[in-house]
Image 1 (cartoon, rainbow, N blue to C red):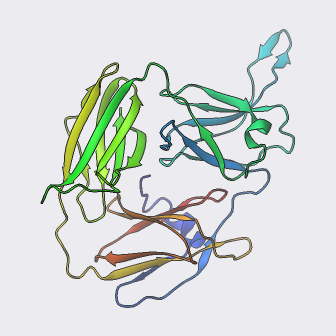
Image 2: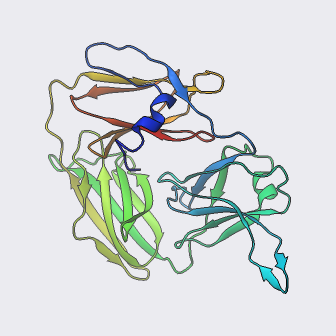
Image 3: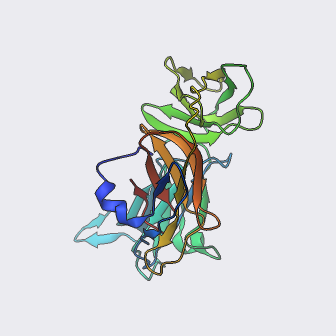
Amino acid sequence: MKFLPLLKRGLFFSFFALTLIFTMISCQNDLIKPKDSTNIISGTITDQQNMSVPNAIVQVVANDKVKMGAKIMDEKIIVADTTDEDGNFTLPNLPVDISNMNFRVLHTDFQKYEVSLQDLIANKDRKKVPVKLLNDSACKGRIEIIVKNKKDSTVINEAEVRMNRSGTIIRKSWTNADGKIIFENVCSGRYWIRIARPHFKVLETDDGFTIEGDNTITRTLYLEPEVADTCCNGVIKIIVKDAGNGQILNGVVVKLWKDAKLIASRQTENTSATFTGICKGTYGFSIWKNGYIGSEW
């Protein structure tokens, strides 16, 4: 997700609370606005490795054809969305009667997914619908990345690794305790990697690499630590409330950005999300929760 400091600042300022403190902690409560609650369905698209699938097209379509004169018209798309970088989607304002509708997911790297909308949501929380895609059978490549500290060659865990192709994020996940991440069932193409971790400089591979057929690419990449700032003692505390009833919301994903780079990600719990060790500077924030309008500021 890319931080848009000017475009959305005015639009979303009233939806969430933000308090920046560099000498002491204080709180300011504000609101996050629910989407129209009329028949909303939302959830997350993942792959066979349980990694999120960004940029998947999600549709609800009427599954009966419409006859116009002598012609049979194409099916009607009722509502559509594209998953964000964490694989999340939201489909608002669905009709009350969904008995004749199908749920469909399209992505070039995965097999088409289609099922009756009623079957999809049966016995599930309509705001936390899980959908798992099967990889395209032609995608057999493998990318193994090990992330290490450039200073001492120790492995770095919980580093965010983005696999990109043709300027688009294809998959995203995090390194394990051994500093490793493996992307399976990778389609043929030219890829480059972006790695981010708090307190390290963001790394983007310049040369890239090519997957052809079932070959495996293994890379060890080194992150350079940021220069320590002895004045990084600031605290940012965010409290998010439901605009409808004023209730404090837990489980809201809050991301902290600086210079359009992701610094850290937290979820609100015990009433707030708190970021510590913050250096002097200008920051941006984005918030997201199933069933609510996401905001950036």
